[in-house]
Every structure is written in C-alpha cells, then in structure tokens.
Image (tube, rainbow, N blue to C red):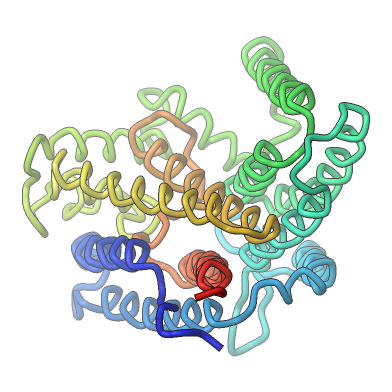
Amino acid sequence: MFGEKKQLDTTILITLAGLFVFSIIAVYSGSGQYVTDNPYHFAVRQVIWYGIGISMMIGIARFDYELLKRIAPYLYFICAGLLLLVYLFGTEKNGSQRWLSFGFIEIQPSEFMKIALIIYLASILSKIGSEKLAFKKSIMFTFRVGLVSIIPFLLIMVQPDLGSALVIIGITVSILVVSSISPKMIGLIFSIGAVFTSLLVYIFYFHQALFTRFFKPHQLSRIYGWLYPEQYTSDYGYQLQQAMLGIGSGQIGGKGVNQGVQVQSGKVPEAHTDFIFAVIGEEFGFIGSSILIFIYFLLIYRLVQIANESNDLFGSFICIGAVGLISLQVFQNIGMTIGVTPITGIALPFVSYGGSALLTNFIVIGLVLSVHLRTRKYLFADE
C-alpha cells in the first residue's frame, strides 16, 4: 500500500520526542509532593499513556483518512449523543459533570467530540471547493457550520467545562478562516466576536448581577481570581499568584529538577496537570520555557505545512483543525499560568499528565500523519 518513500513525518516525531522529555521530567518533579511513597508513580503512568497514544497515532496514520468523510456525520452525532448522556447521567467531580462511568472505566465525551468536530467540519467545508464563495452563499455555509458547532459548545458549557468549550470555538474559527467563504463573511464573524466579548466585559463591570446568572460559582471564582488575584488569595487567586511567583523565580536557567520552592512545597496546586508550565518555568527557567515554546511553534508550523501541501481539501481542513486544537490549548494553558487568560481546565498538550486529553491529541496528530502519507503517495505516483 505504501512505497519505500512512505514514512511518518520526521519533524513531527522529533517534536513529540522533545515534548515527551519535558513531560516525563515535569510530571515527575511536579507530582512528588502528592505521592511520597513512590515519587515515580505519575511519571510511570505518563509513560504508559504515551505508549498507548503513540500506538494509536501510528495505527491511525496508516488508516486512509479519506474514508472518514463518509462516516463524519455519524461520528458527530454519536459524540453529540454521548454529550447529552453526560448531561443526563454523567458523573460529577469537583463541581463539573463531564464523565460517563461504565463501572470499570470513565470516559470524557467532550474529548471525542473535538476529534469528531474536526472531521465533520472538514467534510462540510471541503465540499465547497477552493473557489471563493459569494457573500450570500457564505452566509448559508457559515450558518450550517455555526449550527454544527453550537450544539457541542452548549452541551459542554452546561457541564460546565469552559476550557473545552473554548477549544470547540478555536477549532471552528480555524477551519472557517481558511475555507472558501467570503472574506467579508470572515470579517463579519470576527466583528460579531468582538462585539460579544465587549458586551460580556460591559456586563461584568456594570451589571454583575446579570453576569453571575450565566456562570456557576466555581467559574466565577476563576474569573475573579484571574482579574483580582490579591483579593482572592484563598482560592484561584492564590493558585495564580503562586504559579507566577514560581515562574518568575526561575529566572534564566531555572532552579533545577525537584528544586523549585513553590512547586515542591505544594503551593502550586495541580502542578503535574493544569499548572505544569509553572513547574517548567521555575525549575527549567526562561531557557527551558523558551525551548518548550519553540518546540510547539515547530510542531504547529509543520502542521500548517502539511495542510498546505495536501492535494485534498478534506485533508487540509483536518490539519488546520489540528492547528486550532493544539495552538489554542498551548496559548490558554500557558496564558493562565502567567495571568494573561482566565484559569480553565485545559491541559498543556503532550506535557500535562492525563489520559483523555493526551490520547485526543495523539489521535489528531495521527490523522495529520495520515494526510501527509497520502499526499506523498500522490506526489510520487508517476515515478
């Protein structure tokens, strides 16, 4: 099926190897204060998750992604049905109802929906072709895309899971802006987004009673902790202050593995998951943090290249969906640890400890690799 020249993309594999190194060291260092009897507990489990994820990525890369176009609607509606089941019968943890429990295993359907949405939107917009649409036709397609995206967005928001809901928006906007819809339509989308954001800010500062109706208490705590960390030092404000203090104290070269004062004292909660960048900032310093960000830049740049090289629109849109998924997670996770964005439950891709998010990212990268392999097949067809 594949010629000798068919191989997984080297750049992507190198970047994943770099992220793996950062992940294992940071998970080990950031989880030591939680597991005193076995400090390697989470690091070993992360290695296992990586092994499972890489196996899935390679298997999906060898699968012909073009076959997914036929079943894209079914995948979407199955995942939407699972999200509805979460709303009706989901398991609640820490104030959020995000999981479906099957006794021996728990799944988080919002992660599956991210993959299904990328595939479904790619199938819808690939049917337009590469010619730019008139403004009226663009409205029709944008409305359809909006309807497809708003359903999972709302079902995820009521869990509530603001982080995953933002990822849904990021995926949708990323694919839309490179599609064939009219530039006027794209401008209108961003204008509506700007107006909506301005309206939220206005309501927050001048009509807080109305604002509190749309967010649950723990979400409000995260927002207030982000905007007024000095006044909310008993909750999320404390989290943010300690993370920023740790990152700042890392200076140029960092304090070394297991040497971070803020992290090792347990003052940075969830240091091996959501706040793992605080571990990297304090113990690896500016140099280590910059290397990590450069690796992400290289990965995203390569995803964009593969999208541009693909001779199939469906494949290109899948790659762009992957760009939206990963880049938004990186921006949001790092942003929340340095006070740029509100605190959400978004993990740092391929670095934070955890199974569901890690496997989701590996599956999406597997789809990108599948696009890359089949692009190379067509390029060498005449040789």
